[in-house]
Length: 221
Image (cartoon, rainbow, N blue to C red; front, top):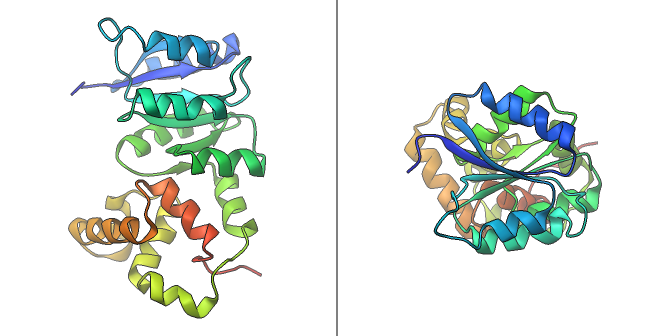
């Protein structure tokens, strides 16, 4: 395993690529191993398995020339099944957010985020958490329609599992959830495994997305 987080950047704006490059140079445990201006070139670079450096994380823009980030996301996941994908985009459109998460993106951040928020998000994802822009998280919590009757919620998740799912939706990682709930890490790990199994998902963003779709979160007036 690499001692540094290897990052591939897929971004068509050269000025923004330079900003991210400079920001990551200050991170002792992150290495920008490759950067591309479009998804086609990035995916093509993965064909040469003898020379490529497998990234641990892909920073992927959505509005790209040619193949869009949403179109490219399934291809990255097929080619790099162990690699996390963090969407980094200007788009806060409802359709883009939901589509990216449903396709398995490990996080969704806006380019308006501060650089430290982006690097913090990368660290969170690599620790197994979900990284969502605060505005995006609020949008998900407040606008998705509930699809299960309230009395059915308890039949799907326990109260504690629902608590854990809610905290995952706030972007907390397992250790932070354990601290918040004053329980052990192993207890949280067990709850997370159970809710993943019940919701039939594989990661935190997908669990949060499914929870909203099923109406598992309390509605807000």
